[in-house]
Image (tube, rainbow, N blue to C red; front, side, top):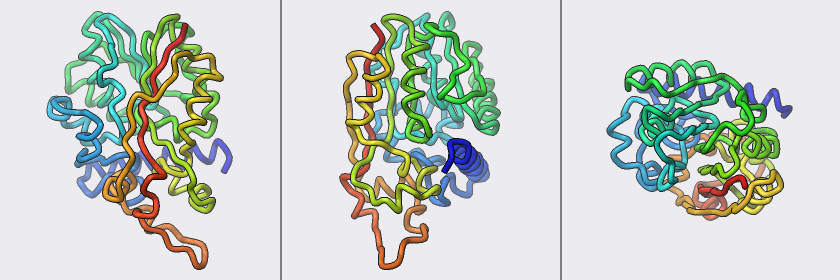
Length: 278
């Protein structure tokens, strides 16, 4: 697929998932329970990721969240700082970040999907937040000034990018000297090639995922320092079902190929990448 095709497919899948989530008919990109995480229920993956009282405080935004981790957990974000969220979706992490930076701080959300931006604006207004700035754009070419962010966060989005090195370079560009990043994302290894080539699995945060080692190398090559994996959550078969719904089981498989979520155990996991800019 071309970069344009990838973006269009992903944007369409998430817009459809958001509409299903609002309608209460299931929020999955693949027709199951989740694009990247479980919209609507925001269940076991959210608990495992460390979300607690935030889920109750921002229930509406949480109900349309497709994250796979909690990039703000123990992140060290301070009042008055500027936090940039790549692929901010319906705004759940924006609201959590807003609480951390306080009224003197600023939170900027970037998303390429109009429906997501509209929902995030609704959730921001409902929460009474005035320090959140939502902008439409691609994470490979951020509409943000260089050296303007104290923190860059992202929750299960970069795996969807067709040009991940460009995203890593943009993170390095927009961070202030001394700035930090905290990224929760899906990584994978040893996936079958037919699965890698599936547009449906791409939107489900599986086919586009790179290995943990490649992720670390990419961040380092962009000039970011102190890069490491702070947390890992290797998905069980049950958590795989919550992550991508029933989408993989509905894929058209090559002749003679059969796959189950159990066969994918140990090959797909969520990792939190941290580091900074010197």
